[in-house]
Each structure stands twice: as structure tokens, then as C-alpha cells.
Amino acid sequence: MDKIKRYIDCVVPISACNLRCHYCYITHNRLFDTKVFPFPKTAKEIRKAFSKERWEGTCLINLCAGGETLLSQETVELAKELLEEGHYVMIVTNGTISKSFFQISEFPQELLKHLFIKFSFQYLELVRMNILDRFFENVSLMKNHGVSFTIEITPSDELMPYIDDVIKICKEKAGAVCHVSIARDETDKDFPVLSKYSYDEYKKIWSVFDSNLFKFKSEIFYKKRKEFCYAGVWSFFVHLDSGDIYQCGYHKNIGNIYKDVSVPIEYCAVGNNCKVAHCFNGHSFLALGAIPELNTPTYTQLRNRVCIDGSEWLTEDVKYLFSSKLCESNEEYSAKQKREINKEGKESVPFSIKVKAAVKNALPESIVQKYDSLKQK
Image 1 (tube, rainbow, N blue to C red):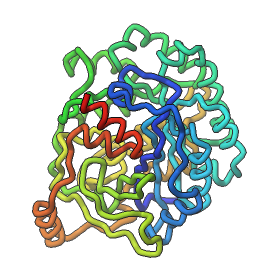
Image 2 (image 1 turned 180 degrees about the horizontal axis):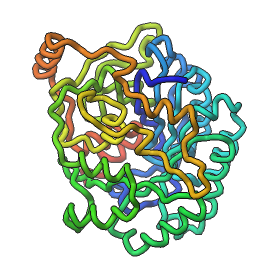
Image 3 (image 1 turned 30 degrees about the vertical axis):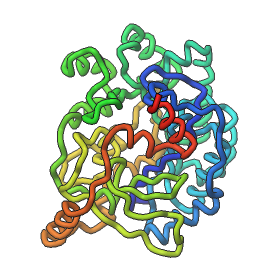
């Protein structure tokens, strides 16, 4: 079985969505587009840009859009191409696009066992639109076809009165309680928790889900990372519309996947120069080992659940990969190399971490223009 060589978090160029979740930053900024635009490259062309030879091994590639990731047929096609290349693929979705899940279910079994679906459980919207059953039917479809998955809910203040209902239906329909993330305020450069409650109260309220994901995120939230980070060498943030490669979501551009697919990736570590207030997405980057000196749970521990019937949300191949750390497939730098990288990082112009720039950076050009026009009003 495989161990992870690199983790690549990809922004899929889709800003359209069939839901309107109250805590979503795109909803807040009125950035939703009603159209699904074509990808700038074909799935086969993107596959070449992500060849195993170029990235030096098996990668875990996350596909996530600003809107709903599976609204485009091209996402399904791309996932299949990346799986055929030999990578493991994660898809972040609200779980409502049944047509896409049916198409995925027809993938060969050798591909499905390397696929992971992160179902974002938008309970209030699903109830409002009367499509709660559809969500769990798609979860069951994936599980029955040997696809690994997790169910994750965003703990917003508006959801608090329904906590017991959420726990009950997850046990009934998915065999286990969903995991819990943390809602953050995207309008503040420090990314605080999006809640009227104190942080201690917030953690106490949502601890009833007994979610390892929530426990770990709670531990690292608000903690500035000062250790040497291998983001930009072991992990990356890529915009599929432009092809631009960033060290992580809020650091500098280090290349482009489309410019010349025959050219190796030029790596550049963040090092001890992290510019972000705290690693709010550390549940993936840190758990997978971007900072090897940190003692963190494995990604398996954060994503899996054992069901009432003894089955699990993760299959064996995905459990094994998610249990590996990036340092197991990569060499760490010497003290001298780290000093040189840190010096270069301090002298370079940092990538802006302003929230508005970050929002714009994750969206197609058409939506950026819409954002700019709204800002001027």
C-alpha cells in the first residue's frame, strides 16, 4: 500500500452553489455566480500537470471549490484522471448532486478504493430545501461502492438548537456521529471563531460530538506556528483556473503547473516564516506532517468513524495512506539548509494574507471582477 509523498490542496474554479449557508464567506460577500464555467484545461491536460513522475510519487490531491465542487461534470472527469494517474483524491462536497455520485459509482473498483469524499453536512439548508434524504442516499451510495468518506458539520450558533437532531440522524443514516469543524470569521485577518460565545463555551457546546477532528482543531486554533514548516515542498495550494502554485493558501506564489509540464516543480519551503495568525487548516496540513516535529494525530484518526455495525468510514487503502506522514517519504533539511531557507523567506516579498485578497485569490476572474465592483459601491 501507498504512503503520501505530497499533499496538494486544489481550488476548483466553481463559484456556483445550490445551497446558501449562512456562515459561508462567499454568501457574505455576494460572490455566488449562477453559471458553471468550463475548466481552463481538460482533465487529461491537468493530469499531465500532476503526473507522478513530476511530483515524485503518490500525492493526496484535494479538490474543493468556492461553491459546490460537484456541480461541474469536469470535476468528476478530473477525479477519475488523477486516480488513474495513481494518486489518491479527496472531493469536498455538500453531498446533494446525485448525478455526479452515480457517475463516480461507475468508476472501476481499483480507483474507488483510492477515493475519499468529504461530505459537508449542511443540515439547516438540507432541511430547508427538503433534501436531507438525498444527502444520506448519496453517502450510502459511496459507502456501498467501497468509497472512503467522512461527514463533517460546521458548528454555527444557528445550528445549536438542532444538535440532538443532528446526532440522532447521523447515527441512524450513517452509522456514526458526524465530525465537527470550527466556524471562522473570514472578515477578520486573524480568523477568529465565528460565534457569539467565548472560545471555552464554544468548545464545551460542540464537544458532545466527541469528534477527534474538533478536538485537534480546538488545540491548534489561535496558536501561532513558529516551527519550520515544509509547506511549499511537501504540501501545496494550487489554483486550477490559473495553475498558480502557492506554498499554502496565504503565502507566496512559487510556480505554475501549466507553464511547462515537462519541467519539475521548484520547491520553496515556508520554513519559520509563517505569516498567518494560526494554522486554521492544520487538521490536514499539520496532521499529514507539514511540521514534522509536531506530535499530531494521523489524518485517519481525524476522519474515520467506527459505525454501530462495526464497519468504518475509511477503507483499508485510504486508512493506510492517511496514517502515513509526509516525513516518511521525504527527507528533512539540515540545520544549514533551514537557515538559508529562512533567510530567503524573510527577504522575499510575502504573499498578502489580507482576507479580501485571499477570497479573490480563490475565485475565477469573472467573480473577482464582480467582487471589485461590489467593493466600490
